[in-house]
Structures are given as C-alpha cells and as structure tokens.
Amino acid sequence: MPSTTTLFWLVMCLPHLALAHYRFQELLTPSQSTRTAIRQPTIIDPMLDATSPLMRCNIHTPATETVAIDAGSNIGFKLDNVIFHPGPAALYLGKVPEGQSAAEWDGSGRSWFKIKNWGGVYDPVMWDFEVLNKLQVNATIPANTPSGEYLLRVEQIGLLIPQEPQYYLSCAQVRIVNGGTGKPEPLVEIPGYFAPDDPGLQLDIYHPVAGETYRVCILHSFPPQCFQGGKSKRR
Ligand SMILES: *[C@@H]1O[C@H](CO)[C@@H](O)[C@H](O)[C@H]1NC(C)=O
Image 1: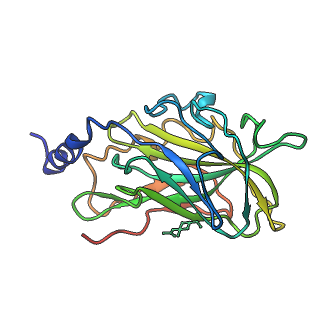
Image 2 (image 1 turned 180 degrees about the vertical axis):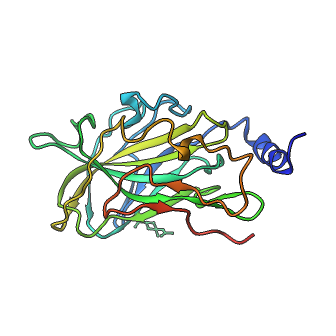
C-alpha cells in the first residue's frame, strides 16, 4: 500500500507534469541582472549521466559576456520555473586555468570547489529541502576567493525518482574582483566530483525516517565543511 507520503508527492507533482522541468537562466549581481553571462541550457531536460563532461555546464549556447563580481557579494540565480523536484542544491566556482578566459574554458580539470550548499531535513512528515519551490537562490561569494575569471556553476539535484537523480545546472561566466588570498581546496573535477552510489544521491525520499537529515558531505567545499541538513521552513 502506498504511504501517505507517496500519495502526497504524487499529488504535489501532478500539476507540474505539463511544465516538466526548470532552468537557471539569469544571474543577479549587486549591480546588474544578466542572461548573457549565462551559458544558457538549450535543453529543458535534466542531466542524468553523472559521468558525462556535460555535467560541467549542461548542453548550452555560448555566453556572450563575463561579468565582474566583488568577492564577498551576494549573488543570485533566477529560474524560469520554480524548483519543484525535491532535492539539494549547490554552487561551485571553477577557476579558469592560466592563459584562458572564462569564455574559452570548457571546465575540464581539477579546478572546482563548492561554495554553497542547500540541504534538507525530514520535518516531520515529509522532506523539506531548502530550495524547494524557490524561483531564485542567493548566496555569498566567499570574501577570500582569489580574484580572477571563473565559471560559477549552480546545480540542483532532483531526487523524485529514487536511484535516478536528475541534475539541473547552469554556468555563468564571472570575473571575481577585489578578491582575497584564500586557497580554495580541495579542488575537484567535474565529472568525478562524487561517487554515483553516494547515500545522498541514492536517498529514497518516499521512505524516509523521521528526524533524518540530508547528508551532503559528498562534495568538498571552500571554506572546508561538511554540510548537513539545512534550515527548515515552518509550515
Ligand atoms: C539576491 O542577490 C541579488 C544580487 O545581489 C539581490 O539584488 C537580491 O536582492 C538578492 N535577494 C535576496 C533574497 O537576498
């Protein structure tokens, strides 16, 4: 017999079937909002193959600009539709290698570090993911990030089908200015930045355990920390 939770999610998801999915399309900085600094995803479907190089910046059209952002500033990504598939989200910075520009770089190599994570808790009858139903996510660029060109990558992992995580992602081309002397580490490669059998990706949201906290230690971060859970919204 399906549990109440399963029924709840079925009902929750039905109205959205026609819309299918969502994309991160706009970058907000304190001085502007831009779509042309984003490598716009050309498909609406999520990435499913976590071993593909397309996990870096999705299937996209080229971005036509690289925008300056002060280290320490608050930035946002806006979507074309709310994030309606439950799951965590994260932001990564990928340092553009010497001699290349953000516009040229394909995101290959061990150059990525995580700067933000949005998790979730089981609270108390369903999973409550911080980004669920958000049309925009905001975060701070760490103040001690070294200046230079980067790809700023946003990723949300839809866990609606157990054991088949869906990856919604976009990259923005940015130039961090007035940066610091931090040493982002450990650096990871995309793909290869997590194990496909990580419990955080294999989570069955329909058979949770009360009090469970979503574990997202799967990905390294700068400054180093092991993210667990997140703020829970009161309903
Ligand atoms: C998100 O960041 C943008 C750019 O700095 C800002 O305009 C906006 O007010 C921020 N929103 C929130 C909720 O912090």
